[in-house]
Amino acid sequence: MINISNQHVETFSQPLNPENNLASFAYTNALLRASEQLSSPVLHSWTLEDTVILGLKDQRLPYLQKALNYLDGKGLHYFIRNSGGLAVASDSGILNFSIFIPWHVNGSELEIDGAYQVMTDVVSAAFPEITIKTGEITHSYCPGTFDLSVNGQKIGGMSQRRNRSGVVVMLYLSINGPQMLRGETIRDFYTRGLQNVENKWHFPDIWPTAMTTIEELLGKPLSLTEANQRLLNVFSDRGSQQLQQVMWSNKFIQYLQQESTTINRLQERLHKEE
Image 1 (tube, rainbow, N blue to C red):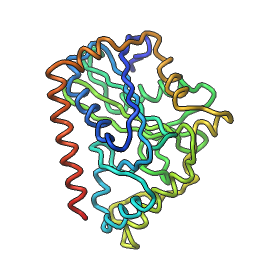
Image 2 (image 1 turned 120 degrees about the vertical axis):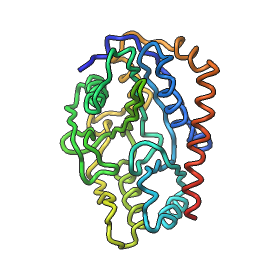
Image 3 (image 1 turned 30 degrees about the horizontal axis):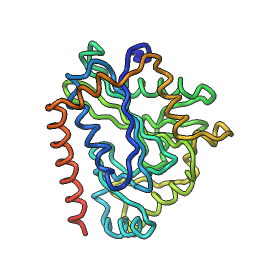
């Protein structure tokens, strides 16, 4: 197991709005492709309001358009990401936080579980007041083996992408806000998308009470800015200059253009269902 908290890290923050929501994963994929150019691990935090981020599997919903119409009716935006399999909510109370680990910096490749453990250790260090466990919370939205939970209630979920040069572990963390309402929205999205058809695709049976927020657990107000700073403070040696040089390079700009095109095409597949 590696401990990246004692290494120099580069940081990058993006407050996004629905008009440029695809930038979140375009930058993620481009940074992963640029792993060989990175001289240290990278921490990427981003926020996105009033959006449901769909997974690739959600395209299989037999009544997908009815489900999308439901989101439209609630004034919610949506798009498909190319990591993770199922829908998650993103709003002003959700923090998205990714760690990029280039193999040449780490010295060797991490196994899948090992990469998830790195993120788990960072979140646990950032919030020492609560005891965080990993393991699937079956009735949460987008359940997974490395769900983060406290007292059986999920506070965050992870996915990862990797290539021959590195890995990125992506986390969404419920900081504050109406988590019950988020759960109800995703539950009702699937209800409308299935329309009582046999659930042979194993879409989740969501119980809104299966999830909570860190603010609720702490019993005191916690802003996204404070939560993000806690995560960053796990790393004592932080900067952004080296990363800026990479992101201004011709190679990275080319990667970003290519990844933007790819994720835009993915949305076209979604809208073909209409």
